[in-house]
Image (cartoon, rainbow, N blue to C red):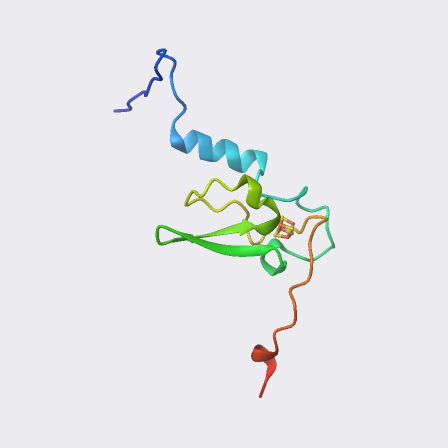
Length: 99
Ligand code: SF4
């Protein structure tokens, strides 16, 4: 059984799942068009890709789009998505490579 939520004026409100799907389709979390960046690079290894913890849920978001973050549990960007034009190499981490 599905329940249709209505707003104050009786208009149906889109279900949360439909909103999430629409958001994914529009690719709103990316700073630029995915695939427009350097070949072979991914969002996951970009300097701007960050993990945000909200109410115990970890989600990946692009720092450059912080002004558009909704603070939802949803992941805005996919780490495997091809890099956009704003892609930047992560800084070298000496801790990872020390003997
Ligand atoms: S490649 Fe980097 S700058 Fe572009 S959307 Fe992904 S995380 Fe953001």
